[in-house]
Image (cartoon, rainbow, N blue to C red; front, side):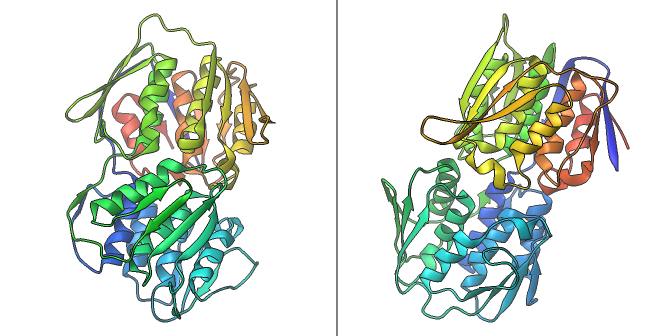
Length: 412
């Protein structure tokens, strides 16, 4: 299956209300489940991953399938480790290739009873009733691992008999997502201390409070791509907060380098073009916003801007190996993605070239929603085709419909 996407002109005018952030929604759902209280969560994401998490949290089945939802699988691993009975947590074949050992090791140190049913350190898992879970609060975990492992541990911490003393070993690669988790926990009454690489959360109780989910800044990034490629922009994006807990909110600052101006207002943000823009080189550390890397890579390709992207260590363990996927798909436009190493041994990549179109390129999506949504905006420059386009339901089911409202033609 594929969609062909076209745009008759290079003008972007309209108003779009973005759905709630999947990252925030999923954390709020886990916190509500852990609190054993009912409180309203307004503007909850309609993402497939969030709908699935809701279903898994309310399920009484002993077998729970998280599908391709990485956040859901990781959060459910920690959640189920605290529940009575025995449950099996599984997922797609791709999920079975995504490591879970770092989180399982940490939970086992706390006393969780978890075993692997197939390959060591990978899903599926059999999770048994806890025995002495949390008697010892001291746990170490690599600071260079996925923030979802760390967030999963933090959210169950208040319910542990002696709380949690978590040591993050090494360089922290996803600090904004950890901060997001702690900020949401604080909204629900849970206190913490974070000094250096140590996070301490005493045993305490989540408080029942209504909550409103902010719109998703990573979803906004696809409209920033359009704005970067457009000749004329007058676009309102509703639901975003100026004082955001999302690391991806740095997008507003970042995109001035590509000629896009962001103005905050009561409904969200307004995008327009900066006058006299010319950008030749782009350098950014994505350590605080890795989910923006694909969007910015596509912008660089479309505008012919040479880029250096550092802080990309986690991109290889996402829904797909995103660096390799960018190499292959942007390579179809004669764009070079060159993996390199920084002087301290960290992975980065360079991007160079100006997108060159022959006929209608077909971009593969690799079961990765962000590949589909980052590449579709290239239709501003030339008609494109997106393979397996429905992968966007993972985080943004209304994506193509919203594109249509601002003048795109989407042909199935």
